[in-house]
Length: 486
Image (cartoon, rainbow, N blue to C red; front, side):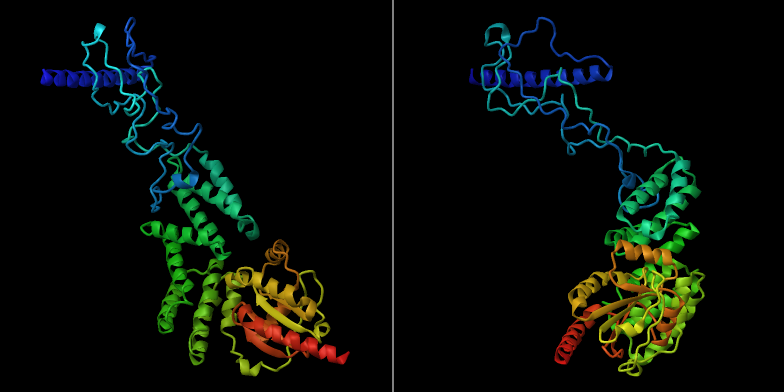
């Protein structure tokens, strides 16, 4: 009898499982046919079966109106490393059951069906796991696990391309802003991902994306630099001529970015590779940062080896049609002016400010003056701009003056930068300051000169961090001297 009772209980549990599973399947089938599901037949009675707790049916549904992110949707079409977005994704984790799936029921330990009057199903154990919702509960709209990725959102390709062309030709300072970069990349990615875009449109959008990311990276946007390298890696197999050209450029520049950390013995080989790259490419303003980084590499060589490298690299940069890059190349080829020929000698500065006022250099006597040769496209210049502001704020009331000398060729970009970054000191711009740069051997930027109260050169450096302790010393000495005069 014990074995019969045990068997009856087991059969009852199996029947219960089958009944619930069947009801769930029927509900889904009816829902798929557009019919309302109702697992209860007229007249059916289950007085001893409490209604199981329902799972949150909304947990498996995507948020209303959710769409694929434009930046993600593009990946995969152009070979990006990341998996392309698939559109609306279910919110639940893989393997989660939707409403109506068979529950994990336990066999009941009560008497089997038939022992109770009317043969009703056994009552559920209150300690059992919550059961799945009944068949009449709405099923979650969960796509099957093997569903094909959703297509990219439909876009007006022509309108997107017109906007891309318009945006990429906006002034450089506008293109620097993080909001601009994010919006532009999203726009370009939508074109790259669109099945309606022609190969030519996709290529144009890709090259524009390279350009905007690189400009943002030059301006110190670390996320843009990471995205740029990632994009180059993803497009390595791209057979398009312009795309392959950009990949080579990113690779060559990436090597120079690490120049301050590589072994000094490896620098000549790195410069040879850079020189070979430059000789084979059409050089433009995007190579400005490379010119600056090449300067950093050459300056790490023994002093006797630098001039030959400056000359050979300068010849490559000077052939560019870009005025800024050609200017840097010409400056590379100028005869060197060793520090020994400068220290203690008078420093004569002339020129016109961005406000069209002539500099009166004689008014800077009895002051400690820091002269900063820089450019808006110079990454290192921009990196140390906050520290220059700190030094100026700390010592301006104690006798320090700061004069910027820009070697930019675009005055509009320069004045916008000065305004947006609230530069408090004057900046010279034009032909005269560039002649001063040549006179004092400024080959690259940043280059800073520390001038004493008599107008003579105290130090030359490319780092405000190196000069700051000396600024402090000379400002304090000037304060003491002026106090003694009183």
